[in-house]
Image (tube, rainbow, N blue to C red; front, side, top):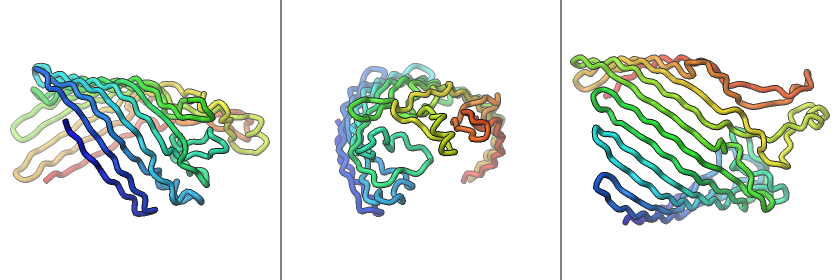
Length: 288
């Protein structure tokens, strides 16, 4: 059994939080089984506090409970599976219009005069299979099914980040000769798309800007997200330091993933913006 208490302080508004945690673990012949529960606090995004009336907002608190099973196979192959349930309290909202919740905030500024009275919850199960660096190869495959919800006027709605599933696979191989290594690495991401509130065409046309209809929450689900990243690296080890030269190609297949939707006031139509395509990145790193 492990038990502890953590104190977190926020000097900006003198806020603080006490976070008790406890976990129980049972060792098995080739792994372990554990259950844990505890409180975790998270301060709001910094742009929330600079809006009038939000200066004294306290952190959002989550009671997190998880059941985890680990199993170790031969050749450094590990399996981990976790089921979890999180209950969120003290979520900033506008009490008179409960559809608004900072759980849905992305990069935009928050509304003014928020009150930390909202609720949310998330739950799911995730599994990963990992092969650590063994024989110059490695890989990890993981997947998760989940739901992320917020409470609005007595009903639960999906948050904008509730894609419902996410999967990823990464792996690589290195060819080592003396103090040099050539590596090829790849990662594939496939997950459920983000959500958006539907756009009100009449309101958008009247006001000359995009107007969303939040009455039914974030009911529009974007298409699933897919991306493939590639990396080729060359590493040279020297006494006391290591040099690495690599080329990263993000979104190597130039997948067209939806970023958001907006109302085009010129065309009087709802249009879609897409995320960036292929992004090459040259990396040179020296490690001491």
